Figure 1 (tube, rainbow, N blue to C red):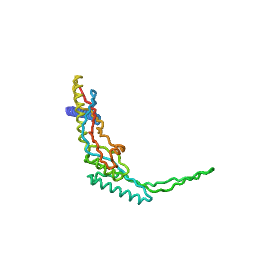
Figure 2 (figure 1 turned 45 degrees about the horizontal axis):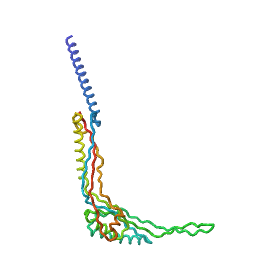
Figure 3 (figure 1 turned 135 degrees about the vertical axis):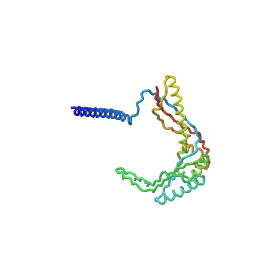
Figure 4 (figure 1 turned 90 degrees about the horizontal axis):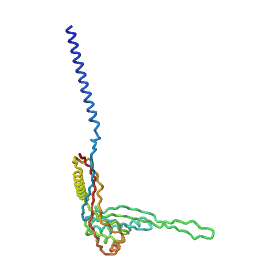
Length: 264
């Protein structure tokens, strides 16, 4: 009888231990599932303020850029290419003499087109004969972009290119070779401007700023000095032997940011 009672007590103890272990594992599993539910979602923030800030920086442009083209037409492709190549070589020689490096001279397009004349005979009283398309020759065109790091030489180089008899000079503009540092400075000023607004707003609302929960920036766009168009170039003497004075001006880079802060 005593042995039977002892076995029942042991069995009861084992069963209770199993129940406690199962309960522990269940609670742990539920806790883990709850923990995993936040993965990728972040902690939702309900109390926030959003402010904007603006910063800007100025710098004198240190690089000039422009494009020119050589266009020649001849009876054959070979002759047109030969004429265009000679003119281009003369122009490139002048550029290199002016201090433009090989790496800053880039061909942007090279095209060969047939050129036709459309001949139409005189109409009679009752009949108009169809016109005839006749091959006139071939046109070869090559466009080259130039970058000048010494902006004081820009006027002289433009005049040299014009004296070589190129077909077109366009797109003169002034830029800053390394804009990233200027963008960083403008962005830093914009962030500081936004932080000052946030601190003042928090004081006015009698709340405390906890942390940044989101940040965005409108692209820091540089505002360059205006390039010269062909009419201005002609008035300045480009292509006519004169060396134009070309004001470079000052470039401005602006950054605008939006920052959202958690408050309590």
